[in-house]
Length: 231
Image 1 (cartoon, one colour):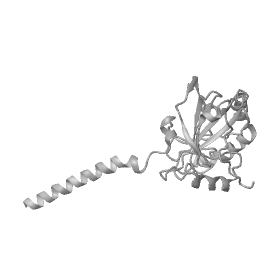
Image 2 (cartoon, helix red, strand yellow):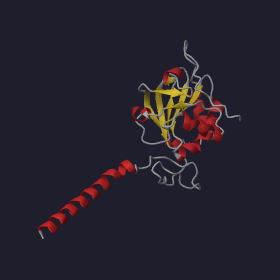
Image 3 (cartoon, one colour):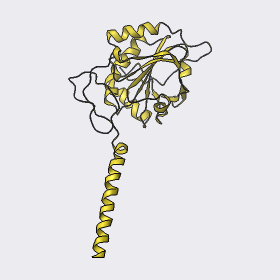
Image 4 (tube, helix red, strand yellow):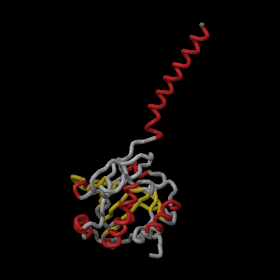
């Protein structure tokens, strides 16, 4: 009887530990999907990194833009370009920058990428630059084939495989996009997917693009390792 009681006690304890572990480990094995927005309501929910689905939400437009009360200095942020060379935001001094944090495993990120590429094609120049910074752990091996498959031809490769920018910029989810002035300060940010070349968004960004004055004197033009897709 004593042995039976001891065995039952051990089983109950193990069951309790198992229940505690399952409850405590769930956020690690299946993190909540980041707050993202679908581009179009009729489409099926985008897959989250955890294998779940993002809830149906409306298209992210200018109403989602959260402007800073005053231009906010950004922390040092370094990454690498498509050739593996160290890069940072200072090399875009003199330009207004649209910094988009994304990953190939993020459904809404993937869906907005073609419009982001078209935006760079329309507004990119001496006063404005789209910097699409990938957080894929696979780095170039993950992003280059994606660019080629989807026909991205205007965006350069910029990579943050260690995801250091997540903490440095205080991101709550992907995609997140920061609007940065010519002096490298954050003007505001948008959380969620955007149709970047829609007339409303283009008009909004054109108002900022004219405020850039090109690369700062003595600065170098970023090559970024632009991928030639043959398109």
